[in-house]
Length: 415
Length: 192
Image (cartoon, rainbow over all chains, first blue to last red; front, side, top):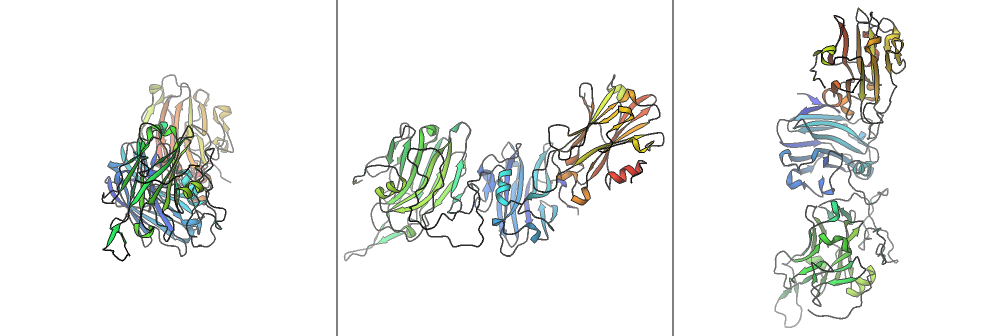
């Protein structure tokens, strides 16, 4: 059977296929394989079109990373389900942190539904490769082996494919253990009267360990990948939903003399909102500040899952059609009563914007003191929705406010 | 307008394009956007006599010999990267000025140093070769090199030849192993 070399193409026999990529391994350097949905412009429509380990299924499952181990990666592709406007599915391999070039593997072989290809890698200086592409030609899908790439690694590749880069990746000579918490929130370049770009306390000895990054999608925002931008034509985003959920089976043990058992932990969701006019609002159940969807602050809290018995947790909604009226939102979670035990609550905040990748932030900074957790910043960045992971812990509203420089005046309240 | 020419197909230029006096052979491709050596494609022409060979080495029109037949064949210049829109290399041919002992013109495309750089047409984006009526710009034939000649490094695109006092065009579209040197040799050029 013919094995296609770089440049060669062949028709596919089926629109539902498995793409198997055997890239081998390089000691001390991880190889990441990804797939991108590409339009006629040669770019992705948004970061949601990048299928990789952190977002294994895209376009409703049209392209899914179904397995990646032992030097190979497997994608399932349903070309019939690929959204209109997507003309190519591009498969890439990148070497994490450019620790080696592809000359370290003898070759990369490909199998797209029985159509086979091979890329000889001897002498390659590239650290990011476009391996192959599925593309449309005269109404039918074909497969082409590419075997070209970039010496500049993921950053250069991402730029080529239109995936946004948050900041250049600083070289990381040796793996360093991530310092504990207080990751610096992503910089926000919108000029704002109250700068919130550097809330890291001056005493913090270590800079953010951020090593990358591409703005990634469904996107678990982590310390390394802490920012994602959601773009939309015309700046309308529809109803943006923010969900807080947590491990509701976890209870706090009552240790008092008359204790009969335990009570569920109650996590509350809230947000600081600054509207375009500079006014600042607090949206939370405490103090009955449930907000308003149609009028300022264009953010509302749906009820209050006081008992934690509602299985899908608490919801905040942002009126994305009024996004132009919103300057910034800081979403936080707090433990209203009881001893903070973030580790056991295992909270997850998801940001859902229609037509956009789901963003997930886990409050997994363990052993933290403080009843407040700033979870995620959602900022109006030139009309884009910029979501940046925070996950910083604070003793209360006041401390949170102070650190993020919002300037509220606080009094005690009760639900 | 555009005549669809299948491989090996013949077309009478005087019938399909009456009044045709000058043609343009265009070669286009996109510059390389990935890292590595540029893709340097070259359009060349062999001006052949009765025996199907060049009459002299001067009849080999390429990047180092741009003008032939006293200006009846004119290569507009070498492009070494593919920079620019549309055709990146063009050869103009004034049919009315071609002397009678010239029986055919053969058009070829090659990748410069393809073997050394391990390149083929399939690695180049949007590479094509076409032939146009210079008057009005109607496309007479076009081949997609990137797609249909992906594993080739050189191709005999086509030829125009005299037949019963009229010019006919034959689309050949045949890949050729070895590049411009062997192609020139095959057409009777003394390659030094």
